[in-house]
Length: 277
Image (cartoon, rainbow, N blue to C red; front, side):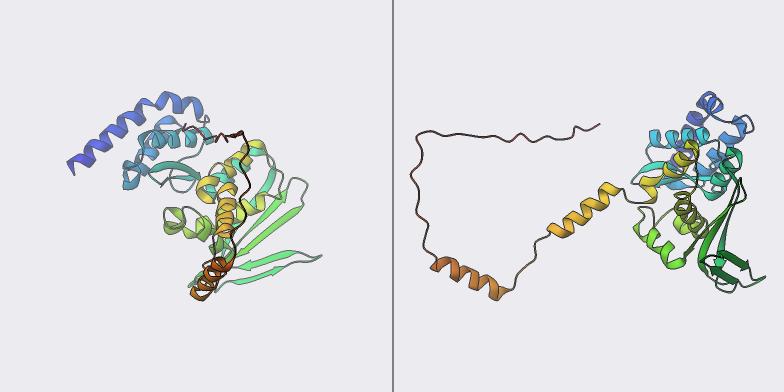
């Protein structure tokens, strides 16, 4: 217990020492005192953060300040992945940035429960009708977003729970963090991320949505590597086939050996290796 108190004191001193950097990055409406207090509360309430790499933890706090969002679990959360702390903007924080960007008029993101009245229609007359049940709404069955552009045009996106679970199961953080503690919020964020691909976005908003790609989803490089490994994985033949192949090889006459040339032309292949950063 005393060791944990010492660790918390060490982290608090470091976070406090970073206040001038936080203040330079934060927007004027977020005080550095409030940001520091919220950050320390989040760290103290998440034991895995105290065990994470210190530099990654302080870097995650700095990225939260640069986004102008609080790491309070609502606007954003600091999570751990393979011993590293990482900043993850959440739906409330993304919506806050959207409102301040001027790119979009409104963006509503909602969860659909099994006992709600919900109707989703595509085609020429696309629309969503949703009347939440007043009590006992049941389990989550989907999530959707409705965006109203500056010119009044509307854009809609809906994902059922199977589609959301497919994303969760592929996510590197699917078995920990917000996916476990705040599934509905992550379901909303999943819809927001998919919907954003069809919307006009400022550079800041696009970066906000993509900065946790490594944590949220496997990288394209990793997926391609996994697919290649599956393709190249040798198939094990049957025992009978192995015996037949051995007999066939024994009956095949050895090839004639051509005389060696008077010279040897040695070729070397130089392998390039990525140097560790």
